[in-house]
Picture 1 (cartoon, rainbow, N blue to C red):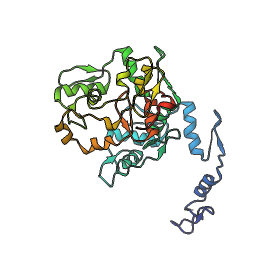
Picture 2 (cartoon, rainbow, N blue to C red; picture 1 turned 180 degrees about the vertical axis):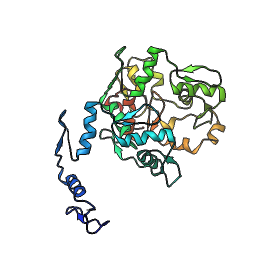
Picture 3 (cartoon, rainbow, N blue to C red; picture 1 turned 30 degrees about the vertical axis):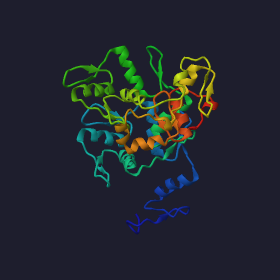
Picture 4 (cartoon, rainbow, N blue to C red; picture 1 turned 90 degrees about the vertical axis):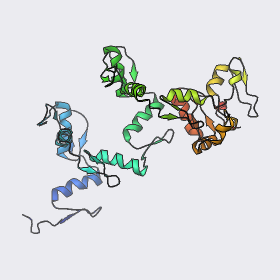
Length: 327
């Protein structure tokens, strides 16, 4: 029995944090010492707390003692059951103080707050891109490593993301779970349904920066943008040896390689008419100042490293001599 109830008499000598019980202090001290006395009998993992070992052991045994009262699902941890239960009750106890949006999990709130702050704490060591979530960084890293851990058991095709495999499996099963409520047409992918809905609504969310034309699909916009942009090497497309006659003397060993790599020269931007030039948007003027243009999709980038990464995302690795800035 404690002589002073409510007082935190057990203080950590390393960080001055205080605790109500000596047992709590003992567990806390292991965060400083790194000691993990509780070892798993099935694998080599060890833990600082006995409770965490018990939870881990259920991975091996398959035990799921926490059962949902609303459905047949069960869980290895009580905390995961609590999170799941909110999908039934609709409870969202975590509220954003900036926009009052509510969430069922504290981790979801943390991710959401980054949409306000712009914080991207997860950085790629290979290309310095940043991400709001660790999972997004893990997926991005596969563009560098080429890792495709999700394999189809029917045709052995591999994918870098789990949902890509899930969508691919529907090409085997013929499943089309996404149905249009207006015409009952069905689709295997949610993105295909969204594109289809634009045929009913007339929505055209992809706008040209130069002439304000709108398109229902991003691919249509990319094709249209090429009517505004003059690219390096367009006249060399059928030549065996391609050498640009611009002062930069950019060259390549084959016309095909040159065409893939062609760099948009911002100062060569052509307007279709005087009236177009007069209504050019501020965003389009900003685009003119960017130095690197992708010859595959028309995207323009300001920083060489970002341009390099963009090329790699296309699965195309341009030679060093072609990676040059604007003339």
